[in-house]
Amino acid sequence: MNRITLQNSRTLSQMAYGVWRLSEAEDTSISANLQRIDACLEQGITTFDHADIYGDYRCEALFGEAVKARPSLRDQIEVVTKTDIMLLSEQWPSTRVKHYDTSSAHVLASVDRSLQRIGVDVIDLLLIHRPDPLCDADALGACLDGLVDCGKVRGIGVSNYMPWDLDLLQSRMKHRLQTNQVEVSLLATTPFINGQIAHAQQHRLPVMAWSPLGGGRLHSQAHQAGSAAARLAPRLEQLAKASGTDTTAVAMAWLMHHPVGVMPVMGSNQLARIKSFDQAFSVPMDRQTWYELYELANGHEVP
Ligand SMILES: NC(=O)c1ccc[n+]([C@@H]2O[C@H](COP(=O)([O-])OP(=O)(O)OC[C@H]3O[C@@H](n4cnc5c(N)ncnc54)[C@H](OP(=O)(O)O)[C@@H]3O)[C@@H](O)[C@H]2O)c1
Image 1 (cartoon, rainbow, N blue to C red):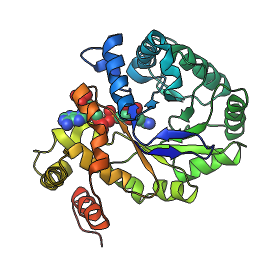
Image 2: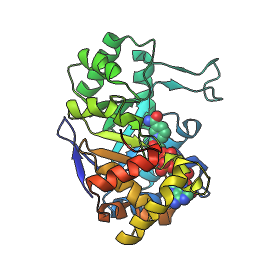
Image 3: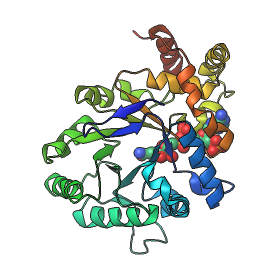
Image 4: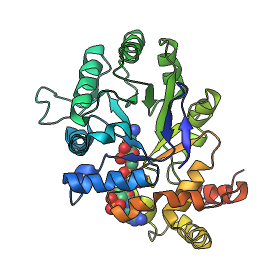
């Protein structure tokens, strides 16, 4: 498994495993989750992507049960988690409206809750989940720097930020931001042209790709006439057959071919699928194949 080096010299596995859907798995027992984690570790996938809100605030704790059952995991994994979204949830009866909260009080309390739920002493990478229109960048920047300085967090990043959101926050921080996690895939190609990937490349930040299979639509819509997934399916299948892999592997090889350093955050709960994530590294990808898939994804050739 390739390792991606961040600006703070720490490394993450190029593929990460995302736990957003963990609470929806058929089997959420500690042993089933340990099997999922082990299947990742066997391939060198050591980076696990969380958010405080996943599974209505339950997924961090589900993962944490596995960590607490096997404390040696703490030294084998990197933990990414996120903060600022406030859901309408029974867990937060005083919340009247879904909103974002980048106040220091919320961010500090959220980090403490994540540490406790996951059962680790330090978060490797804390991401601000979505840009908050009410953000006080001076206050948030100072709060995030403080979290690094006090050792609760090793690095800070953002998610779903546009270049100007990232520049603003970075201008109020002494520590470098480490990544922008955005939705990018064969079914979400906009970041290649809206500045998110160009800006990340300018600042030498790897891009974490959420929903790299379009949340499963790349497969579930493969027979839906007129969809991007249906346009892509025959060529993905050909390339999978030629490389002895599967269509997920080809789609991930396509993402990882980009020189910015894309880190797909994989979302499957199925052990068999998890075990084959690293097939992506066996798929040859070149410029023309990349464009062939890009054009099928977009439904037209480049101008
Ligand atoms: N920063 C953000 O705002 C943000 C937003 C969303 C997600 N994320 C992160 O990104 C991670 C991944 O997102 P995601 O779960 O949407 O990723 P994804 O890999 O695009 O989609 C995963 C879904 O696709 C299904 N799937 C995978 N392979 C399949 C196949 N061969 N055939 C049919 N279905 C298949 C999976 O079902 P099975 O479980 O049955 O395999 C699962 O439901 C999340 O866990 C989270 O960490 C971040």
